[in-house]
Image (cartoon, rainbow over all chains, first blue to last red; front, side, top):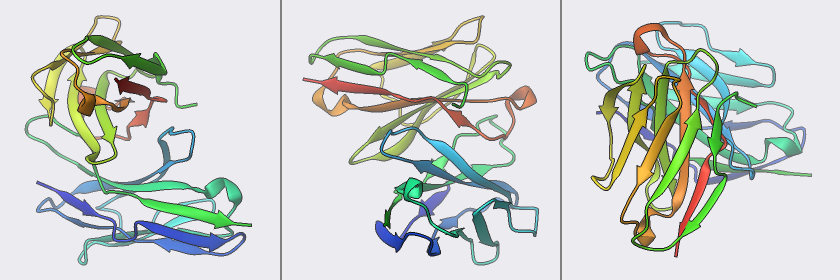
Length: 118
Length: 115
């Protein structure tokens, strides 16, 4: 079974600054996907970024980028030029790339509450 | 907007009652996943359907059941409700052929309050 750990329950950052959210995971799988989802006060779960474990290049989506360290089983999210709209809960999630049982559910961390301060 | 719809947005009911939550996946998506988000348990996987067939079960109580219909919408049925069932219930869908690993897109959720 996989586990996902987010060790920072809460963080804050000044508007326009950069912040990094941490995530570690434990798995015996060699190939898998990792995701960051954002949950703003509206409670909608919004995909931020996705990383395939077999890709060495770190994923980037505009102001969001990841630092994926496969050997260390670490997957951190960097938000550059933070904006007020980035205020949200951020969840790290794991999905196996292959499942003999055909099950591809997401395993989530507990989340990090990020507040962007004007 | 993810393209996944869920109804109703809010549901308030009493203990012992039964409710049905509905989900319509994104157009063309064959896989539907249900998740429960509660304060004490976080986000937990409940059940997965692919093209009408149950694929996997997670931490789903026996009082809960689900199905996916030929038009691919899915319903989650919660019965004999208890106070602890109060939570946000999400539906997610993905498009990978044969139900393989792919990004899941979430609906807006149904907030269930059991009084």
